Length: 199
Image 1: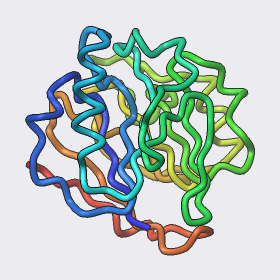
Image 2 (image 1 turned 45 degrees about the vertical axis):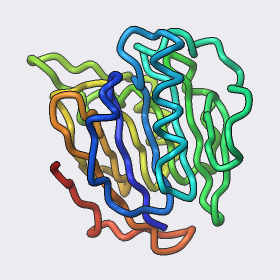
Image 3 (image 1 turned 180 degrees about the vertical axis):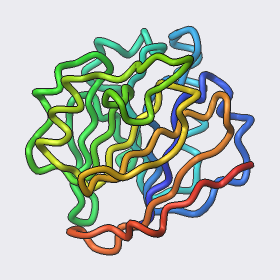
């Protein structure tokens, strides 16, 4: 399974071109800039039309109109709004935590965790400040997902590995790059296959 990760497009999604092939595309929030419904609808129209078999997304701090949403009506079956919920694709469990919701909601058996915020001290530094969430970090290291996908801190875009977990900050607003990962089987991941592709 190939996973394409992007985040923090802030309403500029239609400027993104030449996305690589993948089985699953994941957006880690801040799909909008001002949190207006019209921005979210434009993003959804773009996202739904992308040629990926499965499309997942969570809310970010800019996505105000979705903060309290439980669901979004009339989404195609292959588009998953993971607002404190999971979905399983080919045996891989994805879980999306809504922005600013408690990390205690993260299940113990998640393979791919999607949040907007980073865990503290991991791809979270900007202007000499760490913007990550300490309680989220503790829960992530307790759960040990194979992948933790997030954004939020634009200047910390990148990937790293710690304690056997691959972390990806795919905030695109300042960098225009995204990350891809290859899951070889539901219970393993190719740690050497991730790449950063710059447009």
